[in-house]
Image (cartoon, rainbow, N blue to C red):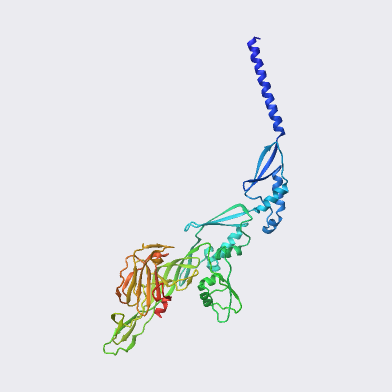
Length: 501
């Protein structure tokens, strides 16, 4: 072997020996290292343990109270707990019970269940509820729905066994929860509210998650209507809160306790109603003058007769409240109305600085026929609805002054398509206010923007003041017709229906 080859061989041998020594040294060092598990809670290290399985078993074993409370088999560590593998030469293990006590003080143990998430497409609001059994949620939703519709009608809809509308009656269509609902399995912290029965969940979906029940003890002379009025409810809301009563005329028992909590639904249960109903229309009053008669003379020469029609219509309902807009699909006249004619003597009177002829005419209905009253003068979701909503005659139909008077306010700068909420025109949108004398004012709201009168204009009964629209804070084409004793907003609102009695 040449000298050069001997040198190369020697160098290779040296390198091999060095590598062997390094590897042996590394293996010797690694053999001395120990595998442990560092335990972190909320990002902070709380100790080191030799077995994560033993920690999980201890957590599951210790939490018998949670198991008994929720009737579950297993309890799991908090979501904020991390157990990470680590190799170390300095082994300082923490007692498992010490680790457990620190975890227990955080009180964030988990059990396995379901998260139900609701997402509203209208206000982009999201929230979640938690249940251990999906059936609890399904049963609660059904109880929530049955607060607004009878079980018989609900089952008929679900089974597809509703009778077709051959006579008078109602047909329900397109029932749905408006929110998007998703359900997924997950570990749930025991710090969360976890619903175990459907009744509790249904009540909170109906009245609100932080509601406090208010009750009232029935006394002599009470009616559902009187109890509702004195507690800022309308009778329908009372019946929703007290499903054991079937109608506003249900008998009450002295000493019984009723629920007067204002409902605050956390979901929107919606459906469409197709309805065939008999509607009575008030007759108009007409005055004719006989100059040969004294001013005090007044006689009904043609008695008024109310008209009767069968109308087929459809409208939307959300959580028991009818939408402001009702669409009349067809109308069958059963009996034509006959206007009442009163013959009077001639008379002249003074109103402020103006002179006018006292026609003696009564109040006339402010819309065209056919029409439908979609919301009465009543409490609605804890607020007084200061008028009646009238729909059915359709977008752009004429709106009439209910009696002689002077226009005191006009709003006509609001967009024709309103929304909810919407503050244009104080929520009334395009509107007209009329002073009829004797401190009596009427309000015509949610009109289209092409209002036909101006402030200061003297009007005769039946003058067209505008057209039915959907402006301001509105959920559909309708007229809000209000009556106020005193200037609107400063005086006292009254039920406009009293004008037509």
